[in-house]
Length: 345
Ligand code: GLA
Image (cartoon, rainbow, N blue to C red):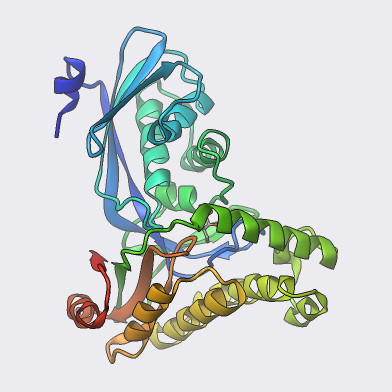
């Protein structure tokens, strides 16, 4: 893997990193003003950056061995560089920089490799140009970069998690007000993340369809966002499948609120209920992910398990008895008919 010096012929001016995230509870709620409960994962993305004295940005993605160059303020081709282009342009960077990217966050698994790239780019630019941006602003600019430059109409969970969460505590976030607190994991438990190995090929189209469906549901219910529905019965007035889509969002918000004071056993039950809701009502799971989730849920050392992220394949998360994660992963993957692997711890 080539270093910054090998690619650009000098040392970088600054270096910054940002982690990926795994969402423990509160899935597909952040674009309806709802509640989420992610934590950072140990894997992160590192950006080395230096001024280059030109009117062009140059990006080298070391893991992909790919280059991109594009004018200051403009969008980039190919796709991987769009996250960097968006972050730099929306942060107001006016001078050309050279950017070297390496990452240990698995790509395309639903663990927010793109948010980690946006936030690490913004952290590096903040340091290099002494930009007056706090961590919330960084997350907001990162989300705009994803929407406006990478064309993904996402909520703000991933960027807030990458910018504000750490890997030892959960970040309970109200995505409407951005009010937040960090909480310890339930006692006696640890997080296990497994990548199912199923590519998330339908993720983008499926995500946009779900967004449109819940926007229609909130319009029909006469609320600003489904966050404002507290009585789940009202969703039954909606036509199929909007009733089920809305039911997921409303019950998922309630699960996040219930999780705040839950012990490991109760937290695990909420995760299991979340998975059932995502599978049956929201229909964003995948049969192979369901297979792995079931293997986990029936394991003696597992409190609860669910798909995580946008869905349609990718990663799943389990809350397991402290110290048991490695053994649980080995047991479950031995029975799984697919290319799964343990990502965390
Ligand atoms: C993706 C999006 C997030 C969120 C999740 C689903 O990760 O980027 O904003 O909507 O899906 O919870």
